[in-house]
Length: 325
Image (cartoon, rainbow, N blue to C red; front, side, top):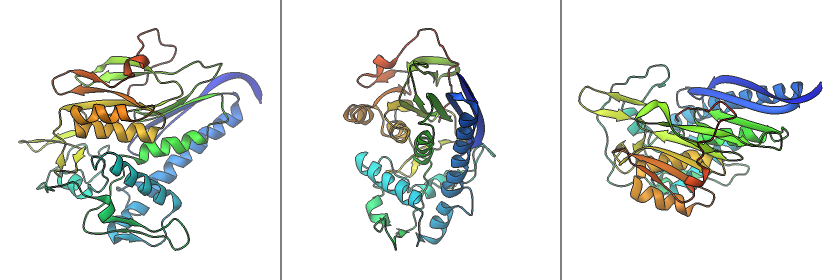
């Protein structure tokens, strides 16, 4: 039934986080069917890429070391991961499963929240995806093989990648917002002039540090101040530095990145936290359409070029989204 343009919303749990989807349309049936389609897509990709589901495609790859007939989605994500590893000089690297498990992160954080670390392995150099991950041409007879004992964790890319795939289902609507635990993508229209997103202060998570205009953009935030645990002696978190095999010890505790795609924003936000300020800012400035803000471990706010052009402290038309990846 056609009517006035209005907002339709759906929330659900997927990929270890709460997902919130809003569409603006004048057709309730079409809007609600699209919202259900997004939820189905998240469930499908969680089943495929989760390392916490023993029957997932990723778990099979890690368990057997190869996939004779990988799905096109698996091949796509792995090829993107290889490209990001090259572009970030190995700072982004999904072959860190052993280190995550050694740090204790071998179960779903949402279900347990506390872990018992084991002895952390140390790698003298970053693991080369080219040496350890082989993908035959994406055609009949394609295959994926992991060489060596390193396992894959795709948590640093697949949520943003899924948000981008979900956004393709919503392009027929006037406007939309997808927020998957802080991995956000938006679209604006003449009836919906913009989306404003608040970024929480990592030193005071109940407060907003700043508010940015994320209209027709993607934005993601990553940090080391929430998913943390301790063995009584040392503190651990989920962002592994592939150069050491240990949780990152850089001078960045949080990073938010605006980018043309959610995949890009998610990968760069995590990379910035692991790489530290000296490497992160030049990386952001080298990426077309990307900008970011970092919070250092001494509370300093550090921005790349153009970030401040997105910042607004004006009145909010919509309830701000305050999630951390």
